[in-house]
Image (tube, rainbow, N blue to C red; front, side):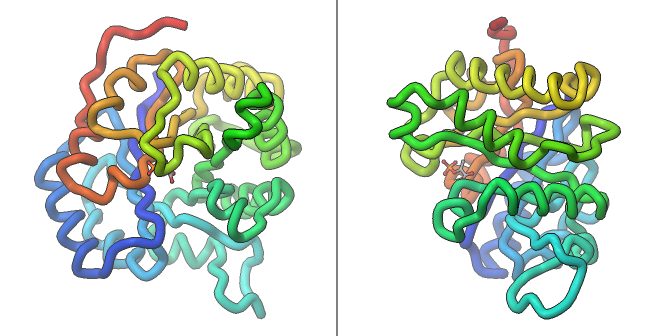
Length: 258
Ligand code: PEP
């Protein structure tokens, strides 16, 4: 049984005061939680304080939105995996489409980041996803598999719970358009099969695969009913405590078998 993950990607939003209020309101509405994990991914300046607010809160975890793969040195503006651990992070988002698009991150960069994260006991949340153009050209499968292989090839992974993969179609991010549960399930099961090919069936059954792209309170239940969807990476809807609390408290429905 894989424990579902509901992850909040706050992106470049929130002041310290706003973040404090959001965490307080979220914990009031969605704590305690059982049978699911919640991962908050604030921007760097909030990590320490959000981490402190989550201290002792079972099943809540802290993630950064990016990491550099070097241990230390003359890399102005970057943070190492050890620095993230020092702030209390247990997870880190790698290869988000915004980083790939605006900061030119490549699959090779993602590979180095995943490797460095894993070596430092951080769980990577590796993002993959196709653009609208690629989708319309029927290239979704090809694109996401190339991203997955590019970031994971040759990595050593002893347990699947040390890796999270988020399938985030770019056309669905921040647009209000969501993939259908059936469509997301189909791509996510292709990704799980590829993880099985790369790392074996046991690991593939442990890896959590999330869907991301305009997840909201009113579509989470149907997404979570899919066999291979183990949670969600949520952007916009994670910035409001009540909406994200509803996502965390999603109602398990009868499984939509694929
Ligand atoms: C994201 O940026 O990871 C994301 C899924 O954003 P949104 O939920 O706003 O589409």
